[in-house]
Image (tube, rainbow, N blue to C red; front, side):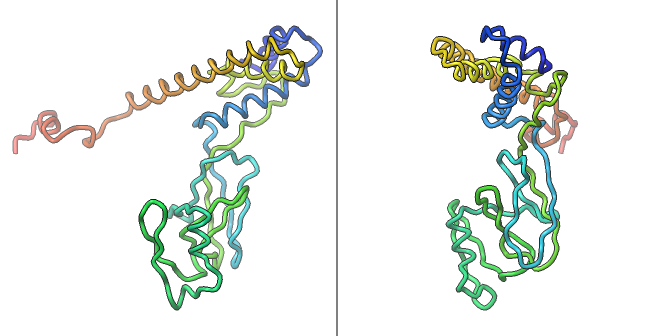
Length: 236
């Protein structure tokens, strides 16, 4: 459903025809809210950056929404908690001369490495990540993450969310409008409708995921040994 059609439904529910610009904003706010509530595959993307020798801290992409993984070349970096990372990077400890074994929260251990070189670990701090070891030269860092939906700029705009889950966008936007208008009766009505739409969105997305898995090409790993031998007529 395109933005103009969404807006027509929303202003009808609000019984107001003088809020077009605000309704456009509420539509974008609702799309973002839904993206925060569910990890839509179409929003999964990748951003690359070059490290700077001697610099450990790098900004996340401006459209970052969450759930990142960080890679250096073809190596996936291990994400540590702030406490684990701070223990690993203790400033007054010479890791080169005296490396330590540190236990992290999942029970596994990591070996402290030299303080400068290709990064092995990272920590997420606000809108930044911090790498360890500190890069000693230029490396390409790839960040895979869920991005924010791009704001609509025209009435003909649409995206995956408005195509497959228009009711969620409509009710979420109408709820924002009712709150703005301080209409308690409509707030209660739209709040329930939005909650139901989110549940339906989650169910539908799970059905899509199950259907994709059902239609994928099977490999030998999908069969137990007896079935595998029968299907491929192996008699040994």
